[in-house]
Length: 251
Image 1 (cartoon, rainbow, N blue to C red):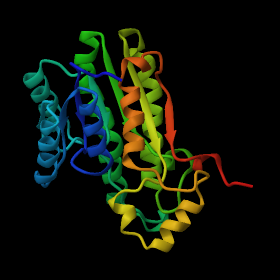
Image 2 (image 1 turned 60 degrees about the vertical axis):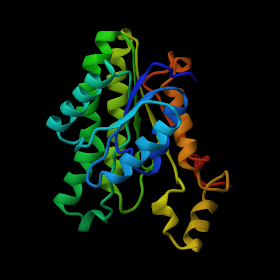
Image 3 (image 1 turned 90 degrees about the horizontal axis):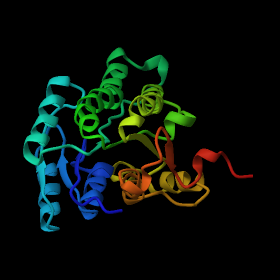
């Protein structure tokens, strides 16, 4: 999967899965723009790591749920590298609560960051991808958007929305040599899950047919493939990276 000469923007890539995706794309040869909001230290650390690998990288801070910020981020990327080839919509948050206790703010914030951002970032990126007649958009959904989860009606709705957006947009831009796909991770071993009690982690692993939690690298490998020329004939698809948990309970 050679991405030499390609320019990638990965939203929410200062930490966790987004960070691993950015590093994997850089390993494949891409110039990678790191986006995050809030503390600039984590994204700057990712840039430093990528530069140590000998690849160009830069930070473009901003709230990807806001069109003004997104247009600035994309314009900055194109000004620095001359184009934008790959967009990875990774930014996301959770505000877990049962529906009866969920506030309007809990719902609206998750929808803005997890779903609206996919729309505004893709719209901005497609203006360049369609013009150059080559592009890859990969959005990070979740198995929760496929099978649901208690206490995550907002998150599940946003992640299911990403799947619908992916399929519709893929049909619109396929003739321009632009593919649009989604990756739906399952239980991934991140800083958030590492904070859980070991008993809870073992319980989670026990529900996975593979028997263990995935890693951010597992997700990053799937993204790198979908961003590559090898995946040129794959569009409008959802690739689950979940160790089989979306298949349902084992007998």
